[in-house]
Length: 249
Image (cartoon, rainbow, N blue to C red):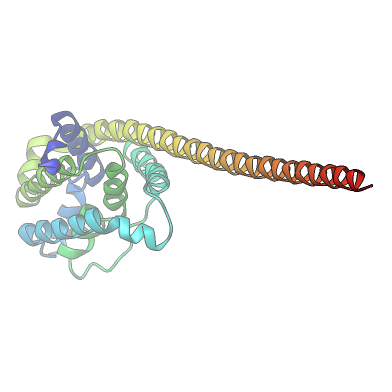
């Protein structure tokens, strides 16, 4: 029940749009068409299933990978926001910064599944979203996006005819701007969380130091009090001895 209690329609829509912009399967239509022109087979169902497995594995196992390298989620999210920022610039300015250079013998796996659908950008986005969104909302967003991916891969030619080159161009620009805004917001929120954690850590250290100082002060006070009591007792014994000696005389 706790798992489903985190559901939020607003978060789900926001996460879905973010992943939609990152995967950018509409913007990849020209790549898909060029692969098919080279007579390379693209299996929509196979590509969707493999992408689903990879994204889910990284969603639930990504934190373990980060722990191996001693990297926290907030730091990774900030780094990921920089990547999303660069990707957004690519979409808006029509420039190519990331070079997808890999073997093209298998078009379904490379480059469709990796890196177009389940690539470094998607993995980075998932971990970044984990730091600010509930898991149930991310799972729904993944399912919705992969259903859309399957539909696009199955009807690439029809979508291209429907949208036209101008439609694909405008769609790419629009989601580029959204992705740019998401990357900035992600960076700011995670930096704020990182600073907040540092402040809490400093306060805890200061509290511990204060407690240790108070303990040392209390020990010193007790020691001084014990020494004073011992001195008073010795002085009292000395006075008693002097009195007894005087009486004997």
